[in-house]
Image (cartoon, rainbow, N blue to C red; front, side, top):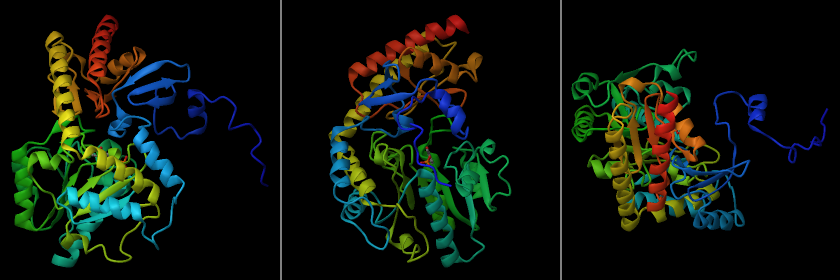
Length: 414
Ligand SMILES: *Cc1c(COP(=O)(O)O)cnc(C)c1O
């Protein structure tokens, strides 16, 4: 029997406790519940202020509730939201033009999440290899410690066994090799390989930049064997590293590139970009998704790409990066027993815990959060900073002040 929703569920107070009562416990969210945000400022249910150096895991690159994006979203919301794949729409056509004109790609496929973009990339690579070389060419090679999403295919391709435990049987023909190890790549990439997928800088795996020589070697090995090189730029893309996509800085061009996270600044949207020749293998009916490239998502993403793909904007990302790096290098020099040397690209920065404090990154970020600074971790051993790309010099100085205060509090209780 249907009952009208009359329990006051839209008005009665909800708290962090409610999470434990009604949501599947896939996450362990913070004790505070954010209710409002603007730029890099966030306020919780008690009105307490936080400086956000997470961007919702490298998503809100233009800051929370960016007025330009709010305008693009509301304008489109009053025009048309969704049409379905029986029709195309103007915002997605413009977004396709913007991304193909700005990158190596000639073709784009739009979907809703990073995992879905990678799923599409891996499926396309299989289909391409199958059609062009035959069914024996099916192997996917990826790196240990990599992260490519949570669908069964992408989580199996990802190099973190803890994420596949209990989900067996896993899809076959997937090999994992150590990151930045050219010899291991040479040994693994044979004629049976359909695709090599790699993050130009590993994000979840600890903020580890790929060596240029390594990424170049992957390109050469793929060219030699006919495998497709897939760059997962879900985290590194859309200005995060100081160029529109990290491959542009590295000087290695992939065959397929995936983009998500910052592409919609928080509105779910993702893209898989590829060449004319490869893209043709996703022919009518071979792949799809209901929401992919819908007008709302596309209108927001178009405005994001337009704003970020600007030399002056990207130069400022590099400038902000240098300032944060300088602060972190000083912090690690002042507390070598606590932190190693900072690493990363642009505004994707990892600060490793030193030997004596391995496994404690979360303990440190929890203290920083209490003091009003939201930080990320990248595994148990690395503190990760990924502020919005519009971070100001004042906010960089404030984050440095709170990080130092957090060090004192952390060492006092450690
Ligand atoms: C976050 C991430 C993904 C997964 O994206 P979802 O939108 O969560 O599916 C895939 N690859 C990389 C490199 C990521 O950082």
